Image 1 (cartoon, rainbow, N blue to C red):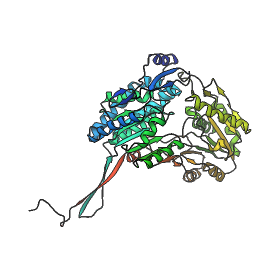
Image 2 (image 1 turned 90 degrees about the vertical axis):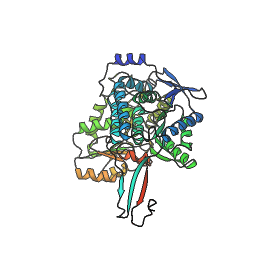
Image 3 (image 1 turned 45 degrees about the horizontal axis):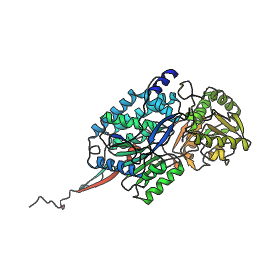
Image 4 (image 1 turned 135 degrees about the vertical axis):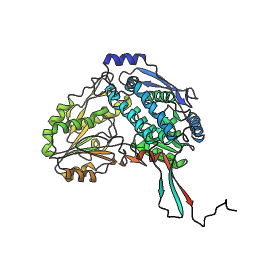
Length: 505
């Protein structure tokens, strides 16, 4: 893990950066064929970072063609798994070597606190690449119990050309979640980073070439969802799309697949995740720290954020005291200052959206226990609204900002009912000293990941994805992530005495 530098040292790195601005296709940087660009802005300062290539359908066609050529000629798909592993591990080492630069670039581009980029996102990106790389030569295929007269082999083959459409809240980490298992499986890829956060993906592609990845295997197309993302979803020569982002956009990719070539689609979408604190929860200072981290980490711009605090009335007052004390330690301000825990929201449009929920809470008479205001045009204070009801918009809609809705319940059964009262089902947390209760709750909650006495998403060894409108078609992370980037093939060989042997005269 990289050690944190000083504010001045991060600013010095930022002053020396010259980020790539063109798309990366077939091993090199290329402007959009139209010549069009869009402006990348530092959300914290409003300063222009770069004018970036605005790719469209013609660029998508070219990138997919190059990815298809690279897949079909076997330069990567037919490479020995040991060789693919070695290149991916070298890429991970190059990312680690350039960690400070990448952390600064990520922070400037997204408004994320540089401390999180440095201590969470990049170390997890490196670990993700190495973990999946090491799996490349350790995943065995199978044989089926076909009896003595046949051999039935079940083999995995890389699915082909994969498009990955990334969100803006964790640009580097989500890039890793997609490319690591897909490249380890032998696929070639066309990546579309979010329009707001394109710079680090371009830098990783450059490092991938330095690591020895063949031309055409990893391509980065910058541009809007309308011009580049939709073209990827509709493309007839893409075999699979992996998407992380909003549920509404995820639905579009299912329609694109239906209207094109029935490409495989894997979606990781939104969440309105419950954090249940029952009346027997212990160590409330620790519980409070977990609740605060769940709600406000990454400014609440997190699909797995614990944005609904469902607390038993008998423990509410004591817990809130600890929560308020803990929140006061979370400093908001310049993302490049490592002392700050909270940075800027990703852009003015999203900032305006989040502020509408601050206004909604005030208009509906909810009590702001802490926060409730915006600051300096792009920053939002960590906010906790009390007296929220389960059917309120504050409890039903994904805000994607640092706003926690507090719902008071009177029983274990009511807590579970409220937890499941949502269209989403990504993650959930339960705090209780009763292990039997905890296990029953984990089984009853309709979510892809349920943590007990902590907030989290599991780790690289556990699958991540959601129930209901939080996900579709597969999971990120773990060995299960490899399944979605491969096709299963059955090879049946008849070895009975009656089998035709063409070599017999």
